[in-house]
Amino acid sequence: MIKTFDEFRCKSEQCTAAMAAKFSGAGSKRFVVLCGGTGCLSSHSAEIREEFEKVINEKGLSDRVSVNQVGCFGFCSQGPFVKIFPEDTLYRMVSLDDVAEIVEKDLMNNEIVERLLYVDPTTKEKVARQDDINFYKKQQRIALHGCGVIDPENIDEALGYGGFAGLAKALTMDRQAVIDEVLASGLRGRGGAGFPTGRKWSFAFGGDGDKYIVCNGDEGDPGAFMDRSILEGNPLAVIEGMAIAGYAIGAQNGYFYVRAEYPIAVNRLRIAIKQAEELGLLGDNIMGSGFSFRAHIRLGAGAFVCGEETALLNSIQGERGMPRPRPPFPAVKGLWGRPTVVNNVETLACVPYILRNGAGSFNNVGTEKSKGTKVFALGGKINNVGLVEVPMGTTLRELIYDIGGGIPGGKEFKAIQTGGPSGGCLTAKDLDAEIDFDNLVARGSMMGSGGAIVMDEDNCMVDVAKFYLEFICDESCGKCSPCRIGTKRMLEILTRITEGKATMVDLDALTELAANIKSNSLCALGQTAPNPILSTLASFKDEYIAHIVDKKCPAHVCKNLMHYEIVADSCVGCGLCEKNCPVNAIYETDYRAEGKKRNARAIDTDKCIKCGLCMASCKLKAIIKK
Image 1 (cartoon, rainbow, N blue to C red):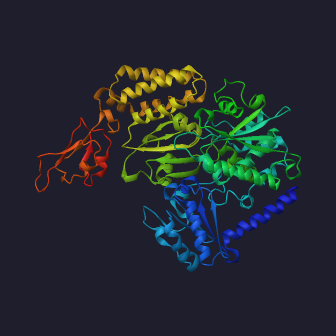
Image 2: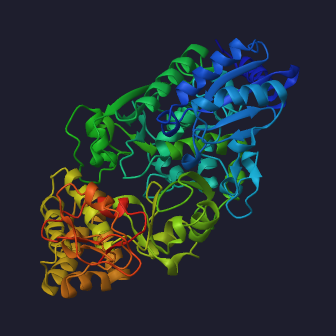
Image 3: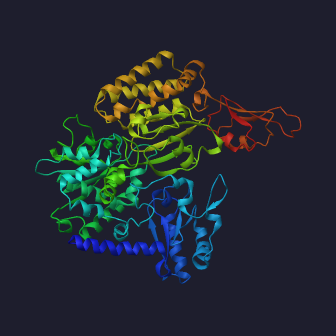
């Protein structure tokens, strides 16, 4: 139990020395670490870890080799990952069958298993170290500090990697000085709105009585997994950030609101809170400072609207998750009517770095109005799917091509949706735009919480807008009519467009509806719901017109406006498509091209359900969309 600052410093020094020994291989000790993020765990990372422990024990290496899990490495498309310390050798796409070879060759004979190394797609060279891979070169980890490095279920490793040093420093400062430090850093909320964090804390600073800190971990954007990965990889950093915020505004209790669909994150958060309490870093009189703070967990049921802070607070109180009119804002009247600061996971994860290293270290990164770094969940039509943290000011081109590795199959980039359902689509003309809060808004999108979905030439932008509207309609709480009714009407129009049943009058109505919903909805869910429509209309209006006037989907995605066709001259009559058709819509014709031994096939469009199985099964690519 740590009771004083001196005891904390002593414990921290011991843990730091242990981590340094791990990285350097002191005493000829070697460490095998495996990615324990959700993505890799779903690809049998836990079973691979057990296999390593079993084989290492069988080979009599238990006294010289240790095995443990860490958080997300970020490079999700290449997982599961295994890293060997102190050599810092990184193996990717590891399976159970690879374990014995890694133990035999690497751990016993110091020979790298080259077939498991990452291969640079440009140079074709094999890369053994993580930092030498292009995916990581332009990244800078602040919010993701410790993720992929420390065991998230071992508080000693967190302490050995700088954990709670920021809180220790804060507790020696005046409360206002802590807020001033965060203000000077330029940190803005990473949940989407980008409001200055220090200013939000200032609103709740004065006055006596109960106050609260709430961590918004209700991450609901399609394709987003930033907050989940931070909570899985270094939950103690977020706990520390929450405690610093609590000290700054005079709160003694904090609440984590995390969706129940994140069981690994929730479990590790529970473990981290328990370990911090047992060590005296949470609870009464922390480090003998006189400051007391406790952290609690509340599970969300998966309602997207509960990402809105007032709906979230209602949910914590056991009420229906519906937004409240503002003002009053939560910093004045929040949880149980008391001043409450709501920050998202990534925001709180940045706070310890600022206190530990000083406001200048954070302020020197980024752009003039957007300081620090931003974590993105990069997905969609991109070679390097994963979690990335880049300095503000990084261009979309760098994000997509340098870090993301470009578009699979040499396809042409079409758009990137940032900010999830609340954001908009940015196109090729925006590729050299710097990523920051204000720049993305000026271009018709937004930073949001950090989702970034890349689309290529095969995506239909009308269908993309329809997808996001379907999501919004499902997630609307129904409290205000502009959102409840208006989004439904917009979805009905989009559906008619994708089915070829709309007119140009519908397009005018869609634009008018979008403007009204945007200006009259109660909360940000409704206010931003039209963004995917407005941004796709601005850049891809010709696609909307093609659906309406020509009754064609240029990308051949909308089923009512496309069909499959077999090119007779390319078909060899093998019959694979016919065998795979679930509705017997493919038949043999009399057509036999010169040099072909079998008759070509054709598709009965009246019977075809457009499932695409025929196209997928054709090895000669003789089936096309039209």
